[in-house]
Length: 277
Image 1 (cartoon, rainbow, N blue to C red):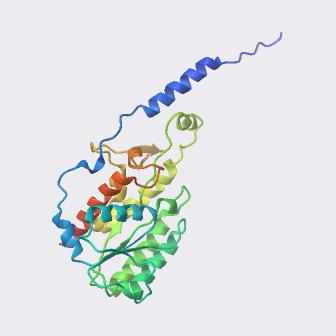
Image 2: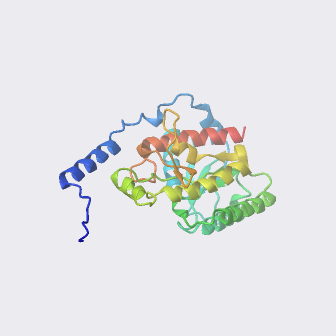
Image 3: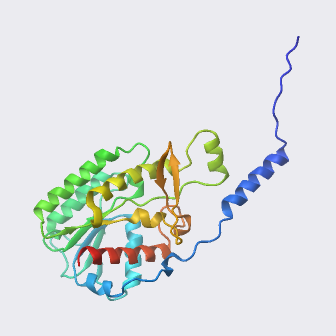
């Protein structure tokens, strides 16, 4: 007897309708409120921070924060990129100094560059110093604990050499996670949407930063993943929770837009003011 084979076919118009419905749902969320609209920023914090000398080593998203600080502070805070200064060219205090450090995707070069800058004049001239890694320094294969061990060892060396410096710590910034029909199809096929595994690695590193350094941590990742109403951009990978960048805070999925940069600048200034009062 000849076997009868059944094939489940979706009519093309039906598939098109499902795809369009998913696309509509993925884009239908109402625009977020302006994240800089919060009240309570202490303008006097700018004056207090302006009376200290600080060095901040960073890349990409760090420039977003610095741009927000420049816009926020106007002429009330001396902000200087020290990249072009020689090793003995630290500017007169007080100053909010900053520079790019290391090479993206190679976090150990950032640790080495930051440590070298402290040893070449910064350590003897600043009140506060800190650095941040970038989202591109992490992927699904990152050995998070080994990386954090290198960071904490570097910080401990610097603390012993420069006991008068207050070291601040910054959580790793996040990216958006792929959404919409493509993400839905990936999940259907047992694959993770773009950004999920990477944000999980960042989350694991950030938890080590938070648990190790407490109130000396500027929690950039928490800020980036928190909506104006207090809810969080979050997801799960194999039952483990991760946080992602709020889509309305970015134009490219990783860097902060103008409004979010200003929000981050306010939080950063308030944080610096708090740890040095």
